Length: 298
Image 1 (cartoon, helix red, strand yellow):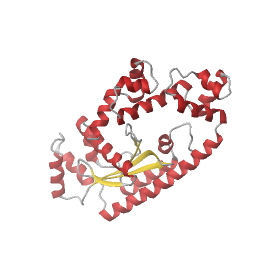
Image 2 (cartoon, helix red, strand yellow):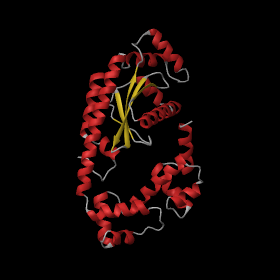
Image 3 (cartoon, rainbow, N blue to C red):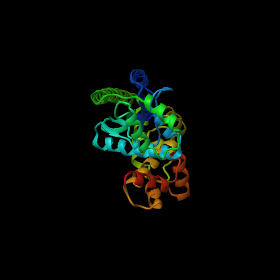
């Protein structure tokens, strides 16, 4: 069952429907499939061992190859999310990829990606073209040959049908997520709902004290702390920091403000503390996060 205690992305990634669908897809067509969060920071790869394109595994085994794949994936997933429609494209290595953005109540929560398909039936001519595209990849030619001729291939019309199937599955999955979100919302204690609304409106305030929010929810601080953690799934301080970091990421992506200005506007009174918290959540500094985002959107 979906739960508001986890993000929509985590709910989708852990749903039995997602796992069963990807298992069936892998068995039927040998196709790799993954679920990506909106910021594409992490990937939930559902591909069973031995399924997928061996050349892609060789590419991703190198630092340069992994970076090429990540940049290509990120760019096209953002294109699909922006348009709100499924997308079929050729990746940097020439393989056919499919992406389907998932929306819950008009909010982009995840993107399904699958493919790594040969663009044409395997042949010697096709293999030579593949070698030419991958001349930068240091891998034994015989190993590449074996991986190429074992790679999955589907005719163009079948790929179109697969994309349609992915879209129908995504729509059904998102409808289930929306329905369960509404049920969970109705179940949530009114005190915690008021507290979350208050935090979402006031997280920029520093300090935002637990006692202040508890008073707004009409609960004692100790009782509020316990109930909030139990219902939301995060301690109060952690939840507030999550809202502040989410706002900081938005400002880093959409404005030219300095990091200091963004830290203050997001509710952090100390730049060092902001940098430390940001790195704990995002595994990089605010400046590095902005640079990565700008590089991906050039």
